View 1 (tube, rainbow, N blue to C red):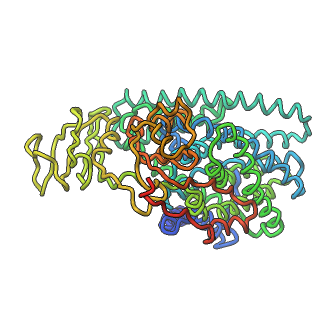
View 2 (cartoon, one colour; view 1 turned 45 degrees about the vertical axis):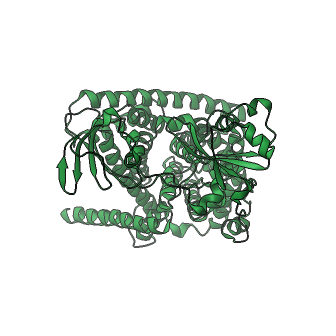
View 3 (cartoon, helix red, strand yellow; view 1 turned 135 degrees about the vertical axis):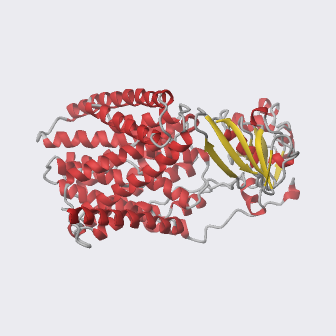
Length: 606
């Protein structure tokens, strides 16, 4: 017995360490991290090193708990302002988009496989949701600075579409397990009623649970080491409570994380670090378990059909769903194309594919193997091309802020207050004469190894280490004062325009110089007001406004959303083509060198 304990611990920890070390490779080469974790599980499984693991119940239980931890962390790190910016299109994708993807994919699955209609739609439901872990790891590993609207849309969609896919999958599994063939009208009614009840209960428990978590943490004086564990246990309690009363536990735990994360919870910085570590551990364990559960020797008989379905999902089902969902929001075609491409499938799809096995469905193992292969196809084809596609579509914008050296320290007994330490860097606003707010008086400044109190240090100097005691909602405001600004690089002139124009100048100057066809009302505005009006009252960094022979580009904004710098280009960028439909054309389009670039602007044309 003792030897068995040691052996299981040895193998388990070795697998986790191997997965952790593999992340270094993924960060170095931008490889899909989930693909590496699954590969380790496959190599060490039944067809590899011979570890026997064929317990569907254990795999589903472990995967469900891990997914609950991941979803709570995703919600905890989602700020409310992201919801205001891209919430409606993202939530449309996470609900209607998942349903459309499942239906379109299910039709193709019925004709490409021997599955019945219900089994085909079941397979579609299992692969209908995107994987947040895979998507955002690739964005981080590739150092991809996406436009904020695109990043926010992907973040919210990936974090919130799992509960819908889970509901559709479980409902279809129950219907198939009953052995009846319901009428289409009855099936639709059951789905709608079940959806409203399940999601409504899950949402109610999640919101109430999130508020309860925030209040309990503030009321109870817990040890600093115990508080993160207490919050994690409460999140799993919310997950279990919602599921026990017939609601969606996954939606509940995601909303609980979002509510708690935006409630000024005590020790939020430490909690985010702890949740980040637990989320990594949960991902590693879930991916390894799912990899161990798969049996590659069963793949050859279905691999051609599964690969064809994977390509259909990538090139047809997902783009159709994204286009239909985002059409009312009038997003640029380049953003729609990128969002449709960055729809990687991952661990949730594999986890859901286990449910037919648990229900004892006749083709349960085939459904699981097919879904597993589809996930591998998605990671192979899409996972390696996210960065090149973003660059090709012009969705990567140059950084507008330079490096910042910052350390946040939580002090015991100081609710909602932090000791923030900044290193003063060259070119930062505080060195250019920008005054610190009254609520941000430095408590201590360390210069050349000497500690000085306010105001003995005089003016701040480059290299100073400044310690400021502030409320935990203010450090983000101080970041702008201690970070160096990045000037527009000559290589980025093509992106930002040949030269800058003053956003406070009257727009009639543009009409007089370039005749872009402005209305009389628009000519009475300033250039900044014109850009803001054309974008419906909200703009973001690097937005581009085409005005006939010229193009205006938002170069910078202040913290209140006011445009402070605008670039002007004489050659408006042409609309980028949508992603080609065939795999061969798409790869050639992504990596080909014959696309050409926009010619350089001549500044003296102004």
